[in-house]
Image (cartoon, rainbow, N blue to C red):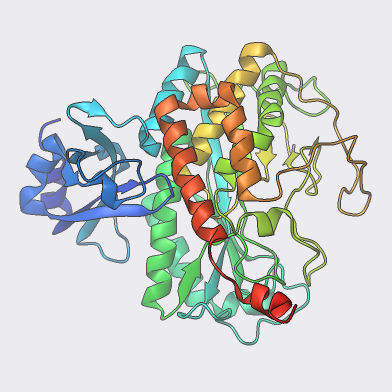
Length: 435
């Protein structure tokens, strides 16, 4: 590996490197390493205690080494004397199988064995709120239908443009910024990339948006449903598969009326077949289920799916096909782990391709107003516990993701559910104190 990072530090005047990894719950962990020490870290990695993070470990486990990946290197646009690096976790000379980035890397290799190179783009929505989290940060953002609101987006011009300018400088190809469907909510789109690169960018994007918001005295949240009366934060994923050279989109078929080749339909079929179980990963928090099972918001629609259905260019379904050669999975939310989101998409897709899965009937109705019978379509789980039970039953998907990861995920998430369930809420007191 040589001295790639040391040379970069000298050339770019870097004082510190942030060696970062994302744990199972999506929390970003890091150590700040002075540039003078980076050469050793590049070889040996930065040391972490796994039990101190959301990984299934005990205090007795040996140190984990976070080995930085130079390909992920990003100089912080808002703090140019610091550089960020995604890293891969190693323990006792072996990769940590439950570590999300390692899970994704393994699945990318599996896909390549089948001559598939998965490329994705994500649309990570977020709110700009007051630092204490009590309300949105713009008191004048009160429209019933605030989506694309020109005045509202310009009132946050300084924050939005600083983030977009950063992405331009990084070469991410940002191409539009808009006020989203909820008051105080925004979305910023950048070009799609190979799944690992998209995951690294997704991870950094969340860090960057939060950091720049704080710089402006605000707080950014990707929480799925921070306000009960407003549309929640989605993280839609656009998915295509290419040949190994990355030159030919093997999902594309000009002769198909929906623009998807047979392999694309099979990949989609895998996602449809495993949607009930993969939702535990795409929508991984207690709060997630208040987005996908929400009542109508003040704007008139939740824009979130609650049925396992696919369509053409129709946003009311779980999957839509907005153009040839790709499809959009509208299920994930802002709490989704950047690495596990890509992992579960690839895992379900590989299964679908292997068995030539049929995605089932296409629906083109407005499923929000033209309700289908429960016997006709499957519905998504209504809470995290149900989703975890569905995931635990799905041996095929668990095996594809890896047993060590799957067992750790189920264990830690069930612990989270039990903590929530034992918590006494204000609602309970308001509704049952005098019974």
